[in-house]
Image 1 (cartoon, rainbow, N blue to C red):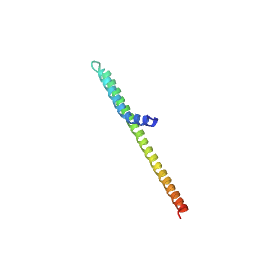
Image 2 (image 1 turned 180 degrees about the horizontal axis):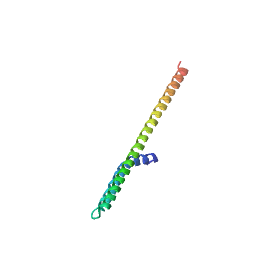
Image 3 (image 1 turned 45 degrees about the horizontal axis):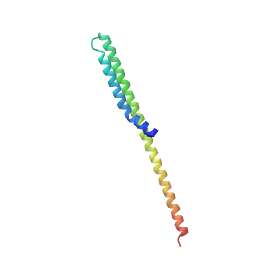
Image 4 (image 1 turned 90 degrees about the horizontal axis):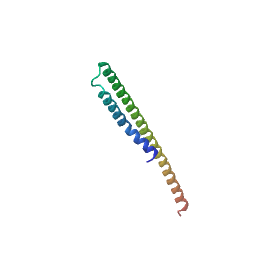
Amino acid sequence: MSEQERKRALRERLPALLVALSIALAGAAWSGCGGGDDESGGEAQERIEKGIEEAKQGVEKGKEEAQKGIEKGGEEAKKGIEKGKEEAQEGIEEAEKYAQEYTP
């Protein structure tokens, strides 16, 4: 697997990983909220909300990075197509020149 493929795979999996992490954090915080006083429950709720917000931000950042990668890939593809067209045109012109020189 090339470096570019590994980066793409990481970008694709990052949002799901962050969501799973936020769910795990929320579950861990809630599991500690059974018999304590209201203050510790409030603190746990704050930690849960903070974890969810951080996960959302991470997902958004991953989404933006993935979009940038897609856009860059599209630009590279367009450049490759243009270069291919130019090379094909040069080949046609060279073939026509060769045909004119060597046909009786």
